[in-house]
Image (tube, rainbow, N blue to C red):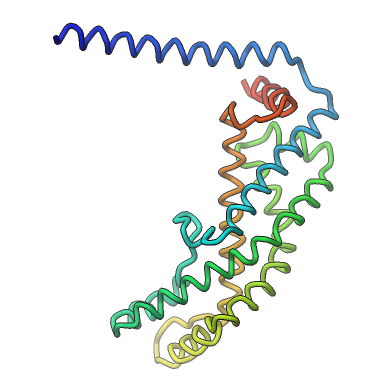
Length: 242
């Protein structure tokens, strides 16, 4: 019985190693078959990839509970207000604190809808130098490009939406009143009573976290290169980095 188990294990290991070798061979063969992309193809391919990645990120986070149910981007009380939150929960006001957290995340979800056209416009404005630097750059080169070129626009679009959303559920008034009351206590670190600034920044941070994940996926996962153009352009990029 033991010998059969060992034989089966050896067979599975052989199949796994063979599959890995085959995948590598297919990738190399694909690169050779497709050839080097033209400058136009590089530009179009990267922009196609970025539109897919940013669009997917925006759609995921703007969905119901897109922020709230995503542990990586879920918005909690600001660090300087967590002591106040602990005090409130100690007084049995758990549901009140939970409602505030829910409202913060739903506000971010409402705002995330505004992101997609901003990214599309940034992609259209890319120069050949931008495209080359991103394609052959670090694994987060595209994410860093978007941070540099879109953060101010995102903030300008996000904050009004977040303010409306927070006001709609009373979260702004509650948080402002709580912050002002807590700030009157002697010798405590002051809390910024403008919660909309905090939520706006956290919403933008969360968006870039998701974009970075999508960028890494398409750089490392052959299956994420869903069109012939993407396969050709990123196969070329892989070859240049070796």
